[in-house]
Length: 460
Image (cartoon, rainbow, N blue to C red; front, side):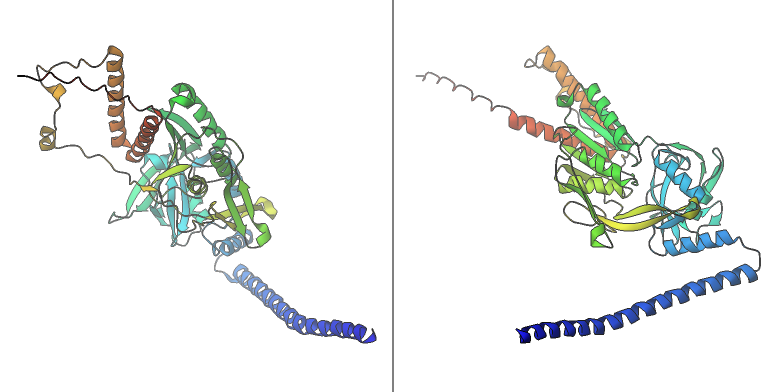
């Protein structure tokens, strides 16, 4: 017994010795790192005081500190930044759906301001600003060297005032100027309308109003159609939607998914991760869904698209999305300002991150514009039997069937017009129409086989 006790005590002492031997260097390393940090902070103080006392012109100390804080944040990634009290208040107003400006969502790329997307119904959209455009000058002043917030401030101003921006666009040889008039941007976050037998839900941003606007638009469209059984499906149009609130993206995706994960986030520490799951219920009761995306679809738009795609709940068409797979947290700090800090990455239900990759559509459909036919092409347009003179009438259709046929022909003509104005949307509508035809045919009973014809009497 005595040997056992001694062995146990010896083991304990040995354990303490090993712990001390390991903890000693770790403690020394931590102390060394802390000392280095304090030295760096002391260096910052030295530089700050030198600037205040020796710079060629007097400087505003508060602005100098703001610039230092912002520089620290923007060095991390393009989406982290500092907001002073004024900018923080403006951001809070923007998430509620109304703000002043040009109506353009931007990010920082290679020292220039890159357009994520213009917002529908705003001066930027009316002026033809496109996703992927670079803004290189504002009122003849280069944006090179500006922070993102400084460039945004430069583009703000009184409603009704003019602003000139210089655009660098891919496939356009030289930069060109665009003059816009600032306006109050009132966002309708989502709206719904009928395109034939298809409900189109156009989501322009993800703010406090998005889900409610979408649900209201869907309800009104279904009432106009005569009920859910009268539509062939839903198109969720997320093109040029730059994103916004994560909570709204989750609610929108949940509206069409019955169960399972919608999105997960993973931060620096394993315990910081979150998982968001769908709740029972589907606003369209399983009707087919098509999601439209393009290079201006970012962040929250990609969360919705990724969830519906991974659950095989929607067919995604269009072009590759923007590829913003990070989550920013707004952290209020002293002085009524706030910091926008990237705190996590988000992952679609299948576990994929779209950061810097984007979401690839199931069917790639570029936006095409119709070209008018020249005289030779018009003269070669084929005719049909119905265009000929003195033709036989069709005796197989009742008056009701003829009316239905004429309605179908009108719908086909309307679809052709839509292809000219919005090829991608027309493709989505055609796809849902095709699915409904196939599903209807599959559900219909097979036609009865015709009775065999009587044999003709043999001739002599």
